[in-house]
Image (cartoon, rainbow, N blue to C red; front, side):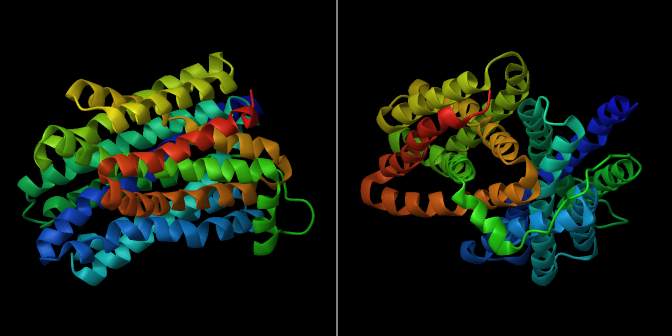
Length: 386
């Protein structure tokens, strides 16, 4: 009976992964806010930067919160915060309203990313965890893909009674979020009680003293840094090497996401049927070849191939590193989850270093910074659980 309940629980959990993807609307939404409020780039960039900031602040405390109220309740809380963030913009689009909305969206996503992955582990009991987390990332990517198209549709089809214009995106995702919350709320999930004294913030940080946890944490920093770094650098490479305009070079970002999504979908299969360590090695080799292509490439074919390779290769690194860390410290999964999600702050660290490097050595310098991350991932291969 429990196995049947657990299998059915995967459905609302996958819908929660879709809700996790709502955070990626911040990219397209910030552009519309900039236009609506006539903001400069510096001010408009406050909105997307808020996302990574809240990961730094809330990830570890969320791991501690799970010890007190449970994983399912923490995911429910994250959904409620996310729903509030989607509801607020329906009443206006002033700077303060949008700042509050994006802050809540970032907080809700930090709560969700920290608690949802361990909840999946609870349902599966550790079996096929990496492949299931990868499939969840594929579901998340669907929401990320849809956001720009929904916003653009809303911008050209203003709904007179509501006056939502591009903000119809928030209304649509609000409905999906309510469905995810309702389904998870009625789904029974057994959680083992936490034994012993609850961990403090210091106790959580001390877990980085465990080599496996530290190496996994650094791997996620590198994964996210390369992810954000590629999105930033790929169009600039095409403009620098091929003389493309920004509009023409923007396809590079789409190409990266296309192959990252394909990687998540196919990776969920490969991680079930082959040795995870070998799949990690193949993924990192693809990323290494990508770095060589982006560093030396001067033709469209080479650069496009390089972008596709890093998109596919980087698509499963997070799931494998995350599941390895969780399985390595099974009695502290909540705390470990918080630390791993805090590693998403790498999305701020890498672009900053890449900016300095590209100013000094053009875009090859930015690629060299990402290559350091790839070199580190080679050292992590032996830590991956089979």
